[in-house]
Image (tube, rainbow, N blue to C red; front, side, top):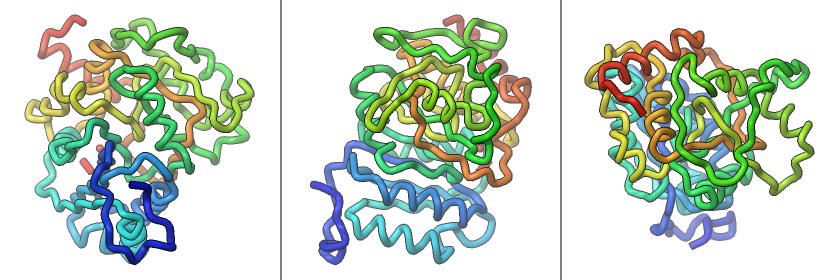
Length: 296
């Protein structure tokens, strides 16, 4: 079933065959959540189910009038919506694991509550995941306040996938780790312009990791343990998405998608620590498991 337009908003029908679950963990960000929901309301396909999990101390973000209005729009479009109050807070990884446990579609998109998606971005990621057959794809959120700030030294590690996306092992100091610089500022926008990409075109590229807007094959994410490692972490931690993605990349491969239609709202966040801080937690987890291969 196609998503409803304004001509059929009052039909009361809900799309029941969604092939994608969108998981949005949030905490104390009602304005940002409203913008994120507005981006989702502009997507034509694929049909999706929306799960919002809130850890605010006070009223949940979805009670804020703009966010509530956008949820009504999504519901009128036929989107099935689940709203969860998930307390107490036990850390970012636990919150992501809780959200994952609510999913049931073949694909899941973890979308941060401060990311707006360009119309068509959801379809591009879904098509890319089907075409590439890897564990995950994603669009790195860009800060458009940096459009006039070109950083060619950070873009130097850009490397498109040539042929199939294959498994690879990323760790601090290993080949490919410096790709993390790619996702700073507006590097993705600059690369897209330099490559002359046109509407409807996309290319996969190699990543160190990709935060904020990542679409997984749900079963593959479950196969590598999801975020169940949260029990071995203190509540205040970061880098939980890096752990999950490194495990996915080692077994199934992963790719970024260019151009990126994801825009970071540039609100204050704890999601941008220094590289050493970002990698401390993943290194600790992998060391404890002897593997060789946000508290929102």
